[in-house]
Amino acid sequence: MGMSSDNVHGLVLALSSSVFIGSSFIVKKKGLKKAGITGVRAGSGGYSYLYEPWWWVGMITMIVGEIANFAAYAYAPAILVTPLGALSIIFSAVLAHFILEEKLHIFGVLGCVLCVVGSTSIVLHAPKERDIESVKQVWRLATQPGFIVYTVVVLIVVGVLIFCYAPRYGPTNMMIYIGICSLMGSLTVMSVKALGIALKLTFSGANQFIYFQTWFFTIVVICFSLMQINFLNKALDTFNTAVISPVYYVMFTTFTILASMIMFKDWDSQNASQIVTELCGFVTILSGTFLLHKTKDMGNEKTVNAQAFSSPGPNPNSNDG
Image 1 (cartoon, rainbow, N blue to C red):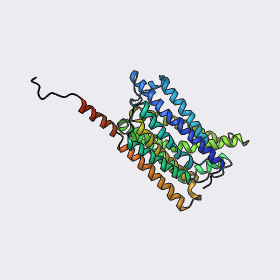
Image 2: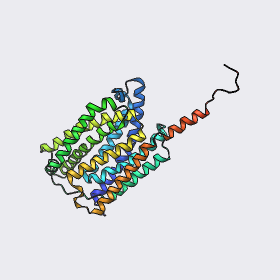
Image 3: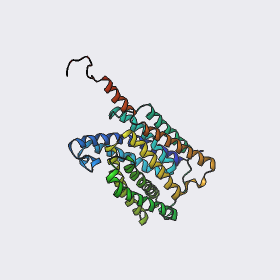
Image 4: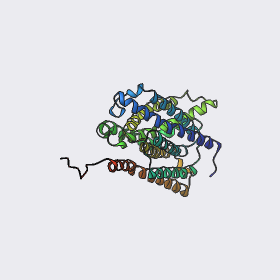
């Protein structure tokens, strides 16, 4: 299907965003590791990384990427923009392999390829953005019963994860931290899209900052983004970056597209063939992530076994003892 000029702008911005964000994972992880040597690790509730220059470089890189991503949502629908985060998976995993020495074996590469193939399938069949003339129109979409129910459910689940499960299982189960980030991220993206549309309309001459809805979406973006940063830091400091990136991507993408489908009804203009193709793309992405997650320690196990076989053992012909 043909792409409008707005969708092309959104596509370019989303691709550049993925490069910056993928790089930021590695730089931030480097800063977190250095900070953990001299202070309390982020995974243990510490904030010593705030004094580490490398972490701030990674943070600035991520902010640049998020700004590009922010602009992309103002031009294109979430179903088009969000799946392009697959590029950040490859960029992050490859850099982690060479810089952080987190080995990415052949199954990891295959998992990343599957993620990209699935994402490409989704992008090629993404619906076109609906025309929105005011932030009030976005507010009406956000206050529909269906999206209100989704928001309430997300806030309840996040509350349970933060207060009941994160303290006990967070350090050993990465799905806790990633689940919090992904669920909150879906609401953040909807607010980012609303704010991006407001800015786009304001720059076009129709000031949207005279409406309280614009300021409400701004506050939501700031508060929810800070929460995501906090728990993403915990996940990065505790688990392997090459695994965190794709799992976070899949969960974040799934919840974001679900939220967009409920709020903006993106699939109303699509036929059954397009919807099925997008669902197949999701299955492909999930398959790649599952493969990467289940085989993440294979390279490490080979290294350990090689060291065990190469280490000198007791000499059976020795007369000692």
